[in-house]
Length: 189
Image (cartoon, rainbow, N blue to C red; front, side):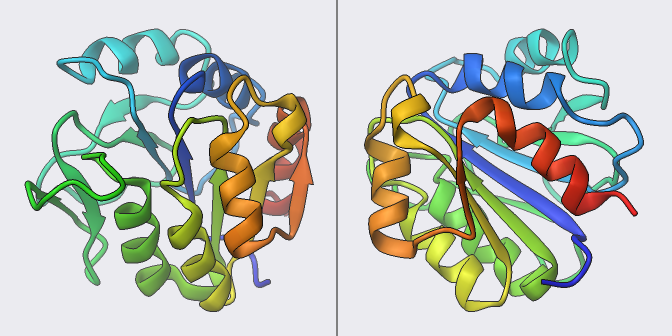
């Protein structure tokens, strides 16, 4: 894989606590955008941004329609919308039907990001109770990107990382605590 240009992260059940660990361990010098799709079940994403912002060394914001992807920021998919990255590296929001019973869908975000960043994208699948993210991670790998999957044994709910492993495999399958230092190593010179 070439030097990473962007990171996409997907999680569901148990995802809030997993994101706190992941974001809390990131190096504040990371310049890559980190795009997150979390099935939070919350009415709004603002509270999640605020809570994660307390542990993240990078600013945490909600992604917005036609806003440019911002390097050095964590950008969360808003509640009720699929989050896509357009070729001009601006966000698009969609109310298309649910994918894997979810909107936002991890697969949708990963697929659009893989088309934009191809072999400079890192895809990360964390804890969750569905198969959302498995197909998207497969597309990341097909485009030449790097796939990181939380080891199912370390996940609060192992179904999502196991589905990702079964469908896409992984370049790295590691416990949650090992993912932030791995991202730092892959993304910093």
